[in-house]
Image (tube, rainbow, N blue to C red; front, side, top):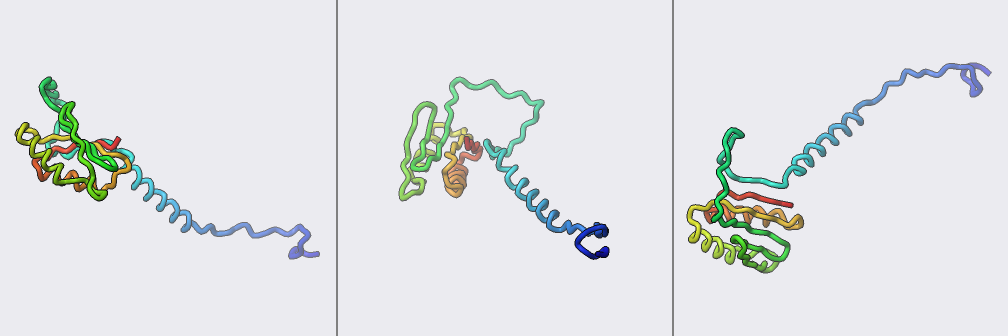
Length: 151
């Protein structure tokens, strides 16, 4: 048999062009997924405070009479905490009761007229649209410095 036969001594052509387009497509897709998910891995605490501080500024000593104000968004209710006092606000038809929340915020604003800070704690299963609506409600009721904790 000759060189074109099955049995052997002929050389095969090994100069084959490798198509890199599918590999580049895969790499670009993986980079996009990496960039999209890497940002959300760092979102455990978010503050909407517009006043910036530098590392050279020393923080003021904590006030022992200061009352912490926080709001927790859970799946079936909200929990408004003023220091150690808690107020449970049940959801109405699966949505937070914003009218009851506004009453609590108005009461807090009358007790603490200079306060603009509040911490919003959320359950990891809470819908994102409820979190955003809650932040908007807090800002509309003069609590502009909203810190979000998603842990």
